Length: 74
Image (cartoon, rainbow, N blue to C red; front, side, top):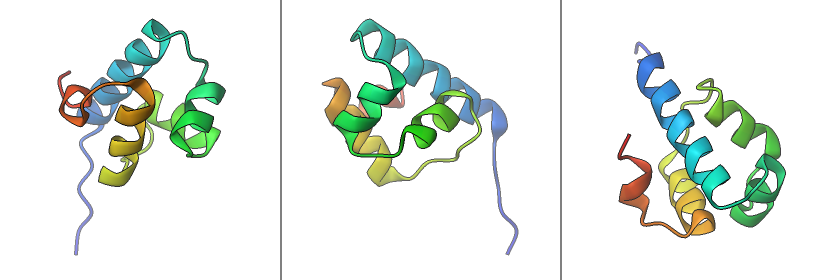
């Protein structure tokens, strides 16, 4: 089976997460702690390097105080 990665989508998602994080006054480290995910995961998501899971999207949305669908509006 061939793995599909759309790097432009990953970069757009990461940029959106970064914008929401900054608008909430979080550092990458504080967002990672609040979402209970690794700091390196937040950094890689924001850099468009990590094709993240649905469960991580849900955790990030909760930590950012937005509906999970908001994270996909980029």
